[in-house]
Structure formats: structure tokens, C-alpha cells
Image 1 (cartoon, rainbow, N blue to C red):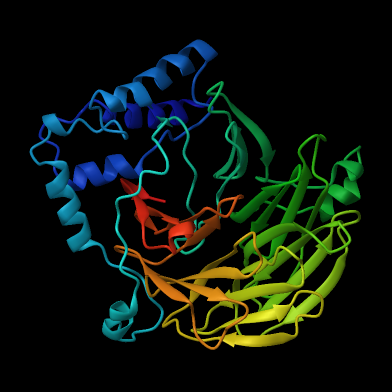
Image 2: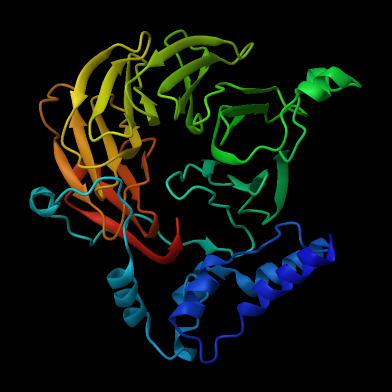
Length: 411
């Protein structure tokens, strides 16, 4: 590793222990920093030593250690005071300036008394890079032992079991498919250069990443090299905002890409050819295909969303109620219920059998709803804000009870 990276790494790790006389701004900087270089140790032993110093285990948390490793007892302010300050000073970003008073009065009254999930482990040795403040599809878990995240130009795999990091994909450039690599100078010239990752998705042994210049790169996790890479749009504002991997009604795996050029593109994964293009009147930030593969939720740079036919892209219903742009959506496994997340700081729940209005409205604490996921068994809905709060709602109790995961930092 270059010395400049080592210096940056040492500086950040030094911050972990330099808490004396730390003020709010210094703590903010500490929370913003993770491990600058995930490969920044010379040996596994050194990595294990650093991890042991910076990680927090469930046993330590039960004994009173802060789950993020912040020694509040050594600071000049309490956790409660810092939380109060964060809430007061946090400024939610919105594209539209619309009054929210009546909206907040309509939100569901929820008791934050749930204890559905227990803290297991926190590490500062792994950090995902957030490049665009509105796009947060940057971390995926395919199992409790397999975590995928992006760091700068790399996609990494981290195992909570072994605590090891493995680089799976590097798009610093040039990026060309493995089938064209063997000394093919033309392929090298026509390959993609440095890609700035905007979004990613991992499912069914397939990794897909999107780029800020309309790129998409795909890799089979059990095969070396890249399976596919291309600029799927040449629009100057064609950033790939989201990618979904799903199985169509025939059982074939497909990709659905949401781009800023107002087009949704559907790819097969056999040859990565385009099998569908759906055109909409505004930039598409996120899509979600229903469990039966018949419908797709489409949200983007508009207060309204669409429920469309997933085969043709034909709009079936306009979803009205949100006050700003939306960046998240998710389906419940039962296929009747779905959710949309918006910069108006709310999540709306919808029932496909009654779409004249939303079923309920869930509110966050401080910011936009950037990510939504239902658990595979349909029991819970996880709702993430841009910073500090993740809310887990109990679906069986009609969302009236939730668990609030309260931490400090960007999510």
C-alpha cells in the first residue's frame, strides 16, 4: 500500500482514541470517517488487531459499551445532548418546497417499543462510500454471513463470521468482459474507463453495479472477471439510479435498470440483451417488481408514482399523496402490499386492491426515506433515513409498533 494511504489510515484510526476535549464538530468528523483503506494493513494479524480495537461485540454492548464505540463518559457532553443537537441541526434535503403540516397530522401513531432484533456486532473496519447523497443502494446482504458493499471503485464482500474483506470487482478501469480480455486490444480500447459507482444490487449469484455516466457492469460471483459491461444510455444526464434483479414469470432472471434519462430498461441475464424499454415523463429513481412479476412500482423525480404493467410498461394507476421526489419502493411478499419512500420524510403503504389513496403513512425522524425493505417472511418492514435512524415496523400489528435503531452517521 502507498504511504499516503497508510498515513490516511493511521490518522483515522488515531481518531478512535483521541476523545479528550472533543466537541460536536470533531465527533461529527469521527462519525463520518471509517477505515479509509479496507486493504490498509500489511497482514491478517494486523487486521485482526485493528478490528479488535475498533469493533464492538454484543457482549461488550451488554456491559454498557456504546455500539459505535463512542466513549461518552470521556466527552464533555452526553449522548442525549448530542442526539438533541443532531435533531435540531439536521436539514433534510427536498427538491420541492411544499408545506408538510397537514401531512404529518395524517401519519400513523406508532409506538417505538419493539425489540425485534438484537445488536450483534459493529465494525469500523468496513465502510461503504456514499458518492451521491440521494442514492443509498450501496449495501446488500444475501445471508447473515455475506455482506456486499462498495468502496470507491471496488465492490467488496465482508463476512461477519470470519471478519475478512474480499474485493470482488474493481471498476477503476479499464473494464471489459472476461470473454474479450485475452490480448484483445480492440476490446481494451472499447471497454469502459473509470466508473463512478452510483448503485448496486446482489441476488442469485449475480452482482450488478450502475454508474454515474449511464454504465452497467455485471459479474457472476462464481466466475472470474466481468460478465457484461456497457453504457446503457448515452444521455448526458443518464445516471443509473437503481438496479433490481428478479425472476420473470418463466423463472428466467432479469435486470431492471432505473435511469435519469426517464427510461426503464429490462435485460435478460443470458446474453444481457435489452428485452424491454419503458418510457416515462420524469427521471426514474427506483422500481420494484411485484412477487408475481405482473406489476412494477415506478418512482422518481415527481410527487406522483406509477403502478405499471411489468411486461409492457403501461401505466395502470397513478399513486398520489407524496409531496416531493421518491427514491425507494418495496413489495411485501404477499403481493398485495407495497411501500414508497419519499423526501417528504414519509413512507406510504399501498394496497393494490384499493389504490385511490394510500393505506397508511409512516413518518421518519429527521430526513427523507432513502431505502425500504420487507423481510423475506413479510413480518417486518425496514425503513432507513439518510442518517441516524432505521425503523423496523411490525407488519402483523398493522405497523403500529416499531423498533427504532438509533445511531449516529450516514446510512
